[in-house]
Image 1 (tube, one colour):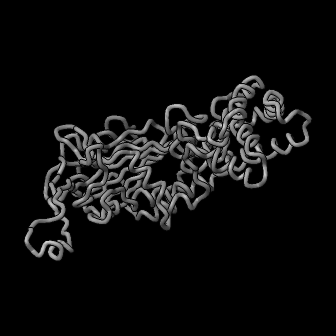
Image 2 (cartoon, rainbow, N blue to C red):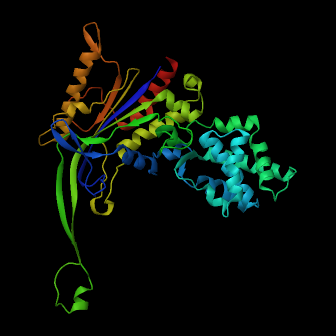
Image 3 (cartoon, helix red, strand yellow):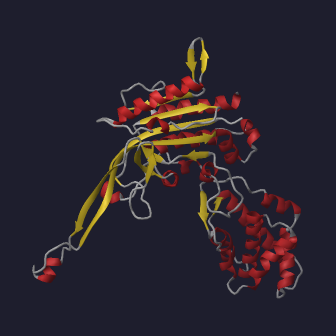
Length: 419
């Protein structure tokens, strides 16, 4: 059975350009009765992943490496530096790459894959592939050790090293051993904390897919888009010296779009899948796994999504803000966004208070429609808790972000596992 944590935040950014489209303008989204300013989920996840502050997710353990050059830079080049033959190293590494990426584990497949590398003029270049692949550091170290062991075994094997066919066959014999090929084919679990959270798939044809345990919605403003074109110039400080003051004008005249907004952000965490991805266990066996890493990751995650700002134009807009409303929910029912509380764009002089009022009102309506009646009282399917600067009524009891992260979330995970 699925068990979820849902995170809802409201964060205000004045005079910024958080996320740009291909033309350099702020990303937008039509929603309800108004166009909203938007920050894409990809932008949010990128900044969360690369944050290096006190509660950084990356400090909980190994992060993934995302590159087209992983097998070249992190496997083959290092083995060549250790003294292994360049051509053999490239062929072995490419054979392993295709075993993991495409499931080419039969000896015939391996022969077909390594022969072109053995015949290439620059064999190491064959390891730079078309698509980004996502590997955790432990995976990379394991794959490198497999390649190193295979190269060592080749040195003991009798074959004509000048013959491409015999070399190809020798590599296929070693990599095609049943136990090894099963291990390589089974490296489909998401490894590295960020891959365990956000999934392994990055482009259309990559290594074995790892399902994302964290689902992130695009953040949108609770109100209609607020924008302004900022006209600016750049002054040539040597202009007067070069022209004798005979010419006037700036060296550069441009404008850029600035926006202000209170953004609603929504994130869902599939707790059993996250445990499975982090611990490498079957999803159905997650309750018996060590929950320590998952708890630490989610504790850091709450601090990250409430404190880490996305943003372009850092030097000219300083787009840094903390969430002013946070609500975390736990439950077993299918999650649901609360963005629909803002289908009618919020208006007023205090957007935070008005937005919290609308979110609270919408949450109560959902509770009344889908919740259970116990002793005449509506009981929602989700447990929830809030932290906010707003003075308006909220859908749950209030506390601090630190208490939610350090006490409430660990308790929910423990309860999930013991239920």
